[in-house]
Length: 486
Ligand code: GLN
Picture 1 (cartoon, rainbow, N blue to C red):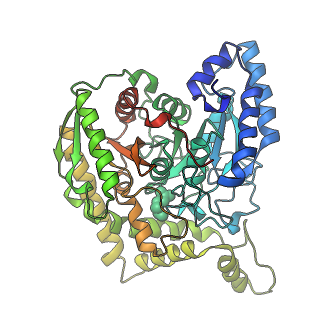
Picture 2 (cartoon, rainbow, N blue to C red):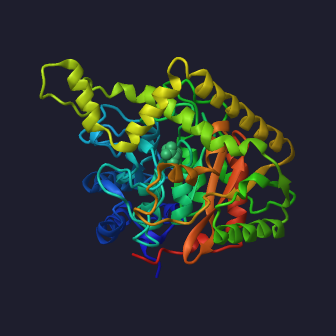
Picture 3 (tube, rainbow, N blue to C red):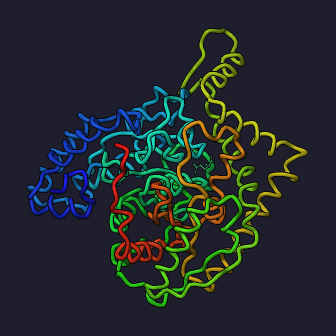
């Protein structure tokens, strides 16, 4: 018999509405699963079990009365600790915010509460979402459910691992340069980065404001559609959110991709990509072809400058965003002095970890007068070129396909060189720079470890990549496999 934690959201939703299971049972099954496996995986910074059971009871009441029902009513979900939850600690994986309880909910949380979700906890992450392995969490690293000695990817590694291990039916993360798609790939779950502006960033702790987006993790495309639907749309509190109408994403899941034009960017097969990854993704591309897609090569010539441009732009924005942590208004505060400047300095010195400080210094340098033109302005020009590459490609193609990450999950402690770590995002970063949408879906295995297949879609074409993901799932079973190490 299928365990309750193995159900997908849409399967559980049907059972809930038929009253075959209750949300309290479903939630308890997930809390039990968390108790059993999280001591090994360490995906959560906080498990909100009491709150979850309370929300589950409330969801059961809603279901019994048949009012205010939504596809996510009564569904246990996990939230990355970068999304503000009113009255509930939101650490951002940092000592700086270790005891920070936001006085308000992020817009995403407002939508989710209105839908009647059950929040099982907040998930671990690289500090301030800076990283690709969840090793930069100030608290502890998260382990990959497929091999506990390996990282789950990052920065939303906790969210990816909870879904992979059946500790939540779905989760939300944030993606600035790949932080949803890359951990999704490394943990064998789907992870979607929506188009910039599709989802409100209000209450998402800012890293790179022109790049950040909140997005979902789940175990199939239908669930991703439901999770995106619940949070997409304009928000008066975020002037960069788009008024573009939100389509019904489930309608896009027709099962057919016959005649769809899919491009394979030549530049996405760089040296350093593991042969096992290349092999799996090449096979996936053949699968898309057998499904009736017209697959051909395309060139995105500016791709090779993506990582360099990102590591100017993202740190530049981060250095401005993180200036607010001065030990005065909120967060960690060094008080053992009468001198204001010393207090600020020490608050930042002790509150931030090494990687965050590296980014602040990089960003401050790139924005400093005399270097602004050479670095920041240059990077913005590259960003325009990357955007133009995609614009041109999407004149001819409905979607693009590539590996999500050049490698499978690496060992905890294996990558000590920051630059090496930055290269984990070589295939995901361009989508953030261009503001388009992308998803990573389970695309096979290499030596027993998951390989992610990345689908990129034009701005506001989430429905197109979801349709491809769904059709691909119908003829593959990678997404149905469960991790072997827990
Ligand atoms: N790994 C990238 C970085 O460290 C991307 C992080 C993210 O998407 N939040 O900046």
